[in-house]
Amino acid sequence: MVNLSIEVIGGKVVFQGGDVISGNVIVDCKQPVDFKKLEITYKGSAKTMWSEGSGDNRTTYVGKEPIFNQTETLLKSTGQKISPGRNLYPFQFQLPLELPSSFESPVELGYIRYRLQARLQQTLKSKRSQLMFTVLEEVDLNKFPLAGEPAISQSSKTLCCWCCTSGLIELEVRANKTGFVPGEFVTVSASIKNGSSSKLRNCKLSIVQLITLSSGYKSKLIRINLTKGAGVAKDCKKRSTITFDPQKIQLPAVVPSHERLCRIIDVDYCVELICHTPLFSEKIRTWALLEVGTIPLNQGSNDETQGEGSTNMPASDFSVPAPTYAAATAVTIPKSEENPEAVTFAPQYNYYDWSQTAFTYK
Image (cartoon, rainbow, N blue to C red):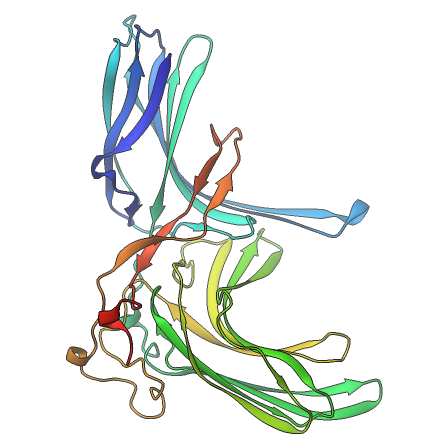
């Protein structure tokens, strides 16, 4: 019986472009093992795949983007056998300087994935092992001039049914600022002025992740609601106005905005106000884009009044919790030619837990 595994020194699982990954491939056996070679592959890749239509009109779109793929031979047979016991074969690999952040689409239609793959090649078979890790691009919100400014969006729509016009509906949504990090609270508010003769139902505020997948010549937009039950839905009667009082929604562990180093996957975020109309189940919405980074603004205020006047306050009055890593939504990656065994994996992202008592916004 031969066990093959990979360990990274220090147990580190999150890296940035340019970092060096050092570790060992471990061959654990009770008896001498014949082999041809032992090798390790360092691999980063992105892929998208989705289908549209049905039956004979069903089309599948696929996008692939290699990021890096390098194989190193750690041990080559010259007639010797691997000795019984726990045998360690060291490796070291420097990641390319510029890499997109790891990403797993919650609906499993796309990914940006990094892995180490070891292979012990024997005469009649090969033993394989894999270790996945997270790459996290640094995104400093202090480099975005508008990150401390309120995010505001306004839109209007006139409901029409055949030749009849029902009146103007005006929506406004607001976030206390534009730039946030995971773990931070987004303070959102909204108003609806319903000048139509129809009642608007189930009007609700949400924070939404916008995922754009590309195959190179076709694209698909996926909307993921990150609010997880927060917020209260309201109805807006005809010829009336309602407001949503400021509410705080904590941003979960998510990938930073803009996968700028990947051609086939992009990620944005927004605070969105959506209403349901009685007209053929039509929805009307407005949204204000947010920037999600890994390094928070080093000065600013997160109370409900931010955006009404100055958006900044002295850094000494703004306490930032120490960052940790938190896992995003896990996905199960099935066994395949590329994956030697089924594995559950969740990328890890910077997380600033403002829900701690010492950092709760006043």
